[in-house]
Image (cartoon, rainbow, N blue to C red; front, side):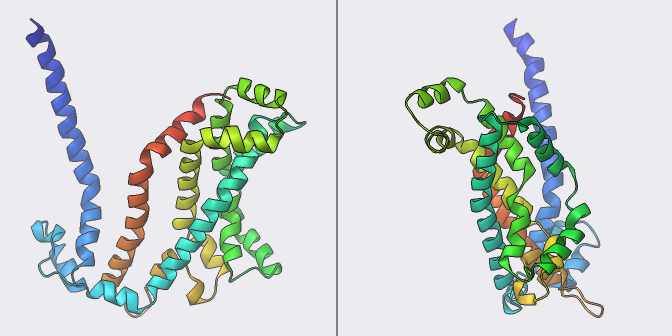
Length: 283
């Protein structure tokens, strides 16, 4: 009797698993094609893509020419620029976002709800809508062609503040009351109680800040005019010109640019999921 009742459930699980595998494979096909194109010539890439076969996803003749071309044209320097910009944004941005979130979640001050409303509004407005006037302001301040210009807009991330604030709201208020009775000030409460408990949320917001800067294109191209200061996405775009394009090199650079955040996300995905899940806990 039990066998007949569990059989449909097992069949459903098998079908859902098979469906998930098919969907995952469909999403992976472009990625596999990109990786395969990294290790073959541009001619072979377009020839093998004309009809679907194993050679579409597996190069006939492996070559590292595309990676060598990317290295010779200074892509390593552009990639290093992206790493520096993203790292500085993550470190400084987490500190700023955590302090702002702590104040909005714990400290009762006049206009707190209004400030929180402005924080929510800040990440609802597309950055593209303010990028050009902001770039003009940076130009007037002589901040163009600098790490400062690339980093500053990513520090005040409203979404990061929102996620951390929601996480902080889930921490019992009794801990704060006990610490206040013991004479602890707000800085000590923030550093000794909230930060240690907010590790998943801090890592999740760090990933958000990292991805914001890693994939940025419009802002870097507005505030940098020197090729040596270009971040990786801008350097890839400049590979194309009016006369010719080295598609093999583009594939290699794009693959490297995509692999780095993919590895980081896979390693830290459980923290990211935990931080996002906490956003709906309280309001």
